[in-house]
Amino acid sequence: MQASGVKVTDEVISVFNDMKVRKAQANEDEKKKRKKAILFCLSKDLKNIVLDDGKEILQGDLGTTVHDPYQHFVKMLPPDDCRYALYDATYETKETKKEDLVFIFAPDSAPLKSKMIYASSKDAIKRKFEIKHEWQVNGLEDLKDRHTLAEKLGGSSVISLEGCPI
Image (cartoon, rainbow, N blue to C red; front, side, top):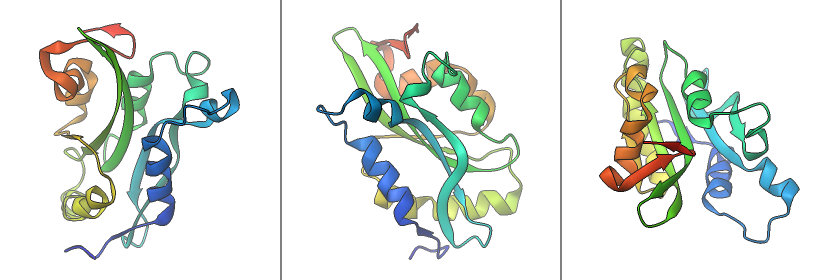
């Protein structure tokens, strides 16, 4: 229980655990079903953090229905409400290629009541997710430039994000 009283559903925790663990022995079918990005929202009764139905990108979508996963992800976010998101960023530094999960909290253009509930519930979800990158986005404009995410991931050492040069 948090200050807001909001709970994280088991389904949300399960999705996070699946995204966190990259199975080396996964077959092609399993790899295609892996989530690249997913959105979470508050349930209608404001008591639980749940999956935002249909708001996901699967690894199998890349190159078929999704050509730029980062831009596709940005377009999934509602312009007028808050969301929590997990984004599995693929990036390259001067030394190596990396993949890291980023927890994103996108609030700013939402109504005040929604921002307050999401902000007070953020700790509930963060406590369930052991994650090293967090990004609180003030407005969708912040998200449109992939340089900002690259900065969160590794500063000036990041040279590409999702195959696009920085």
